[in-house]
Length: 188
Image 1 (cartoon, helix red, strand yellow):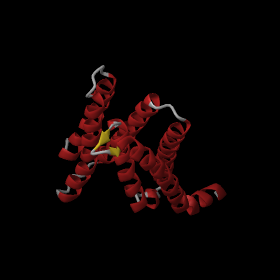
Image 2 (image 1 turned 90 degrees about the vertical axis):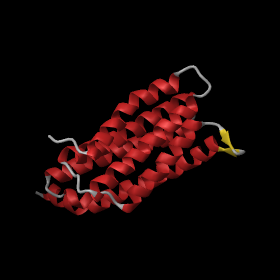
Image 3 (image 1 turned 120 degrees about the horizontal axis):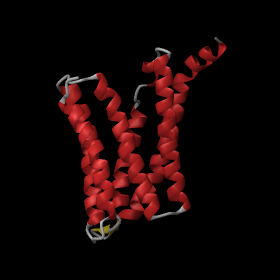
Image 4 (image 1 turned 45 degrees about the vertical axis):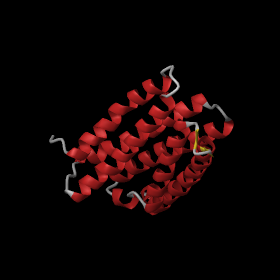
């Protein structure tokens, strides 16, 4: 297996997960800023590895498998850290919706791939928008402080709610796209 630059960036994102956790729990005032920067950097590598793969035709089966796994792991860990720090009903609900949808859509994609229909559940525009909103929300929630007088954490809460709603919408879009194949498979 040849490691491409996009795959190395994806692996870097996975390595950054324990770093994020460690920094989040350090007993210093600046750790929230550092955690937000680490997560923002990881989010940028998520975009960058895809851009490099498309631009320089550096696709690999391993990279295609690993990229969404790295993304979901990083998001799930950031959500868990946020809920642990701010254990409200709404924060837990939004996190559960996002993590639950990610698991469900991953399972749906795997099943559709086994049926030879993976293309029916490829990443849609709404999924990309959801990812952007989710990443910005988590950066704000990890940052936790005011910036230029703006309540960044509150903005993050609202963005996370929006991301959860977009998560449901995109999950339904994936299910709708797969539904004819699922119904046909059920009849067989």
